[in-house]
Image (cartoon, rainbow, N blue to C red; front, side):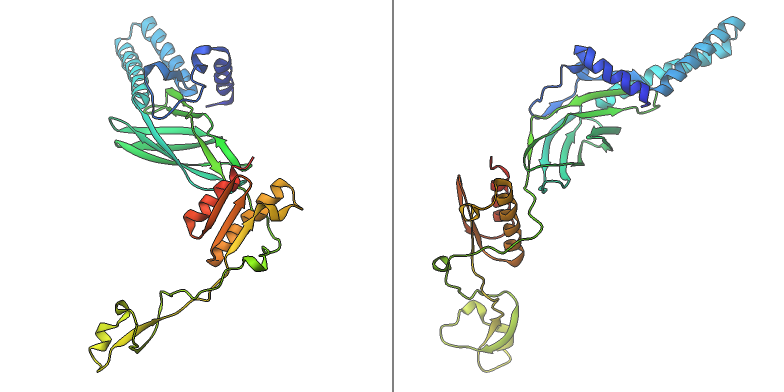
Length: 315
């Protein structure tokens, strides 16, 4: 859409209540119907309309039946294209939205789940200055990247869905404003000291059972039967046991909000976020103590996501 038409559309949205009544967020699922789908001619459609008018005047002036028939056929095709553009959006349903994880300042991936009772072609969605095109064969998942600036809950922007299919003469569009927010994690600081653990708070390091096979050894009384190498033992007189590598034990990190009193609130959050990332990368167990929540020691992606989410929602 050209600049003047975009300005006209923005002016109409500000001045006409019928075009702005759907600005308020609404719960999912959101279904498009005839009361919320708008149609306007495109710049190409306006030029095509002027051409039809000139053809009609010329055909009537010269009483040319062939030219008049051609004008009527082209006009009927234009009217049919308007109906097809409307039916491309009519009945379209936004069933759900899934959000990934992102640090503040990084794009957040959104997955929009659409459904329609019949196939749709050339549907486009505008979000935060970007346009994505997709087609539906019953259902479709559309992936968008949403810019983020700060941690915490981020309300989803209003989405414009539109189509000018099949001839580009008319543009049918509607608004989607889901009543949903996504959580943005805090951005860790770039560098800093490691966490300091109190001497009386260190846990006794215990060797952990490894997962990689290191060698085979003779059976010793008390060995677990599940570690017997049955195939290798069949070729020997004695039982052989699988001996696994034992990773070096690591101390549990106890990350405490109150231990960073010298820093301001956002600096504390950034440092704790960095420590969480380092502990997860090193395979350590770690706990997190916040003013309003205490997360016990653990590790893994789910534990990391829980800790980062707790930091993100701090006031």
